Length: 213
Image (cartoon, rainbow, N blue to C red; front, side, top):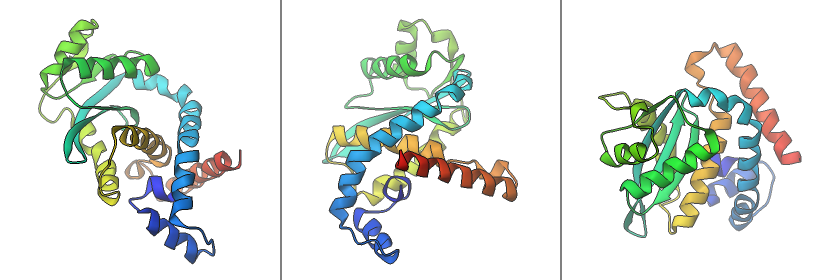
């Protein structure tokens, strides 16, 4: 949880655990992340699947630049109207073919939304036209701020990891990070402090339950 949720390095996590009386190396933390991260992410997604029905109302799609060994790649991300990340997908290009593959993957898991908000990238329009959803696309100034803002937690995490070295590792981390972020994201500005504390305790208890399973 510490490594995936917060912008910490493996050695930062090692030091934090040491302060709590847990003596492990950063390589052990790396092993835990590779071994259990995808398992926890899959279980979180499975448990939240019933609440994903509302996600078919409005999606926000956007792509962000991510460098891998100095080369520019693209991380496509889809999130719903509440900021919950639905899908992350890595490609080397951002053309129609890449957009189409991303859309098909997202819709295969979460169904077709009623409205799809994108930026002005023409690849979205071409891909949506091919799958018969061009009439659902919306573009416009500030309409996609939800997607733009959702990139920030991942950008902070990217800087802490000193970038990525392989597309596969980026795809894996993006998927796990999205699920863990969804699990702990409470949108605290919508709630009173008392309600937020109750909700935060419930989320943490559920996470501990995943670890004990």
